[in-house]
Length: 100
Image 1: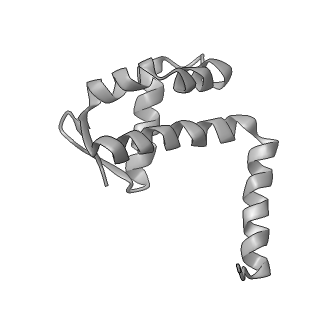
Image 2: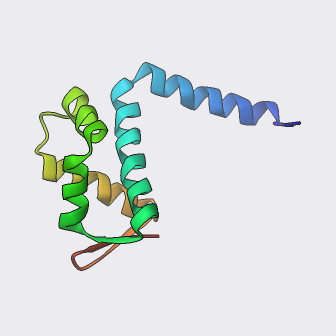
């Protein structure tokens, strides 16, 4: 049914191994995915509301407590959001964060 070329599978395995070997990298990626899914759901939010949603989301908090507790919460979310912007999957317009 699926006809993946060997190099595609090798690349996927390499990425999975990188996550297995570096749990904080995997957690970082998971946190960005949670933020992106919220943007997909809402399409646009005030950044303060985006931040509050993240603060109230228990799984997001679990990731932070396990891997990123030393970073102030607002700074961490701002950093993740900036990475989403650099990846062109989100954008800012003043106080709004928008799905891209």
